[in-house]
Image (cartoon, rainbow, N blue to C red):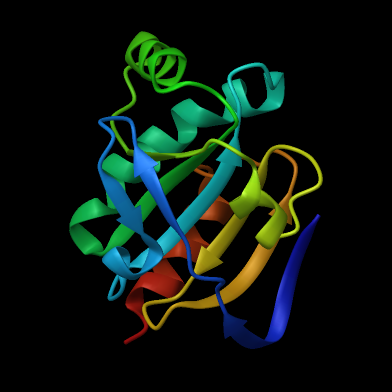
Length: 147
């Protein structure tokens, strides 16, 4: 289920640590389109979806797409090992206590938000999708082409 917003709304601000323990905030990606995906290693649909996110990262990072994974309540070590095992190197931050997931009203995984270059949520998608398929790529092409 993809829920488009008739009028984009400001994305809730956050600061979390990345896998290296460095703080990252949503504001650090301002100017990029942010593909914000909430996931966990124990979530089978999430695991199936992550290689697609890596392909999106490789295809669109030079055009201003920031693929950002938000891991739900797992350790940096577990997340790092999993990301290495699937060959993923897109940005991943750790929602250690679930506070950011609560702020975004995430009730199940995976959930994805698309945030425009001004920091506004364009849509929310609940459940896995074929993100790197023709429809997903066409949508990203459209959004990335906007100023």
